[in-house]
Amino acid sequence: MICSDFLISVLPETVIPLIAIFSPVICSVLIVMFKNHPNLREGWTIITSVICCVSILSLIPFILKDGTISLSLFTIFPGIDYAYHVDAFGLIFALTSSLLWIIVSFYSIGYMRSLNEHNQTRFYFFFALAMFSTIGVAFSRNLVTMYIHYELLSLFTYPLVAHEETREALSAGRKYLVYMITSGCFLLAATLVTYWLTGTTDFTYSGIITINSASKIVLQSLFVIFILGFMKAAYMPFHSWLPTAMVAPTPVSALLHAVAVVKAGVFGIIRVVCYIYGINLIQELGLGVILACFISFTVIVANLFAIREDNLKKRLAYSTINQLAFIILGASLLSPLSLKGSMIHIFFHAFMKITLFMCAGTITAITGMKYISEMKGIGKAMPITSISFIIGALGMCGLPPAAGFISKWFIGLGAIDSGYTIFLFVILIASLLDAVYFFPIIWTILFDELDKGNFDKIKTKIKDNKISVTLMVLPLLITAIASVLFFIFPDTLGVLNLADIAVNNLFCIYGG
Image 1: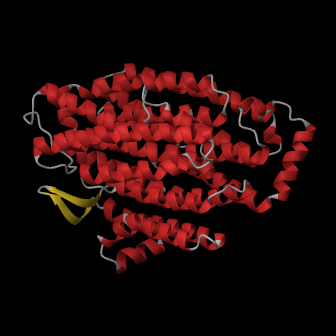
Image 2: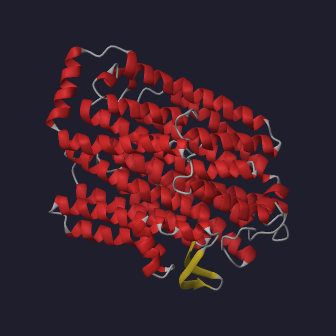
Image 3: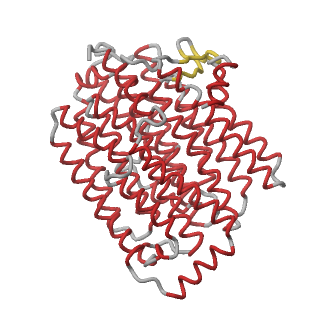
């Protein structure tokens, strides 16, 4: 934390969030400038990801003192500024994104070079801009600023989804863009109606909409429009874009599932529930229970889809849909414990899921295998990758020694605390189904027989591409170890404290 302490001591506190948000934009320019020098091009990616992360880490001590940082760049309309605001909840999301950007950057170098991917400059360029959009979503002070970054995120990730430029990839990209543009239209409509009703779109702990803002049916309908505006959360039936997008390179899949896109969706839903409507109004309108019932369908059914899927990345995609629904379910229960569980699951799930996707990508890059049924016994040839996968899988099931146990525990306690015990059974059934589709993968890679010829081929490929393989394996090992360390030392980065501050601020409004 020495660099972080230095930053906070020499720079005004309002400047540091701007460094975190806009440094990826500068990086994108440098990537293009050095497109003919791959080492320098990728070096700027690494350097910028570290600068972004250190900037965000430096804000933690300030926010832990129950502080916030606000800055306005310019006024768009009366009552609406293009502005940023750092609070505990936003910092959790930004911290998640910035830490994993460093990890994915190293992994991307090994992955893209080992497969000799085309248009690598374009890949790194749009990846940096996607991170700019993501940090902007995390630190947005109001719906308008969030909408701008939310839409930019859709535009900047489209070229990444369609990166392979095959017919399948281009089709997946078009489908992705249709969903994202439709989502943006709903979000824009909801934002305009909110401004018309309240004269502002700022996020506040008590919410800006009141029971007197409009009739109940109008407020309930507006909430539905907001939920449709955050289709990035990939809840059913608006989920099919996510498995389809698995045609993208694995670093992009990691970006979509663990770092940026889908997390922006669930982050936005929690912002609306807690900071636009407010806990009290959501309870008065009965929207929490309705959302919980609606999202429980996704929690269960996504796992049923995962069970029948043989393509490893697509099975992981359905797992992501399930885990995102867990986060939304925790928020909809409106309990301090469940909200805390949702907030920290954004962070913990990211490390576990990115581990799984990097393992899947490493297996494909080295062996060419994409289907689980092909991966018999590969754990004998790729032990580090396989053990890392097991850790991530256990975390998805909510089992020790991975951090997923902690966040799911809080969400489960929140279900009891809210008085809706039925949702505890939803959580338990879904966790059991997690095991149903993850444990067979573990059995296949560890205990099935590996053909001697395949073993030799895999070992030869690893030996011949030692540097690229190391750049892929080391990041997934780091995130796997981190997933365990967060279980043993859950407040290592202050995430639990940040969640406590965010939840306490929300519930102190109503006297606890």
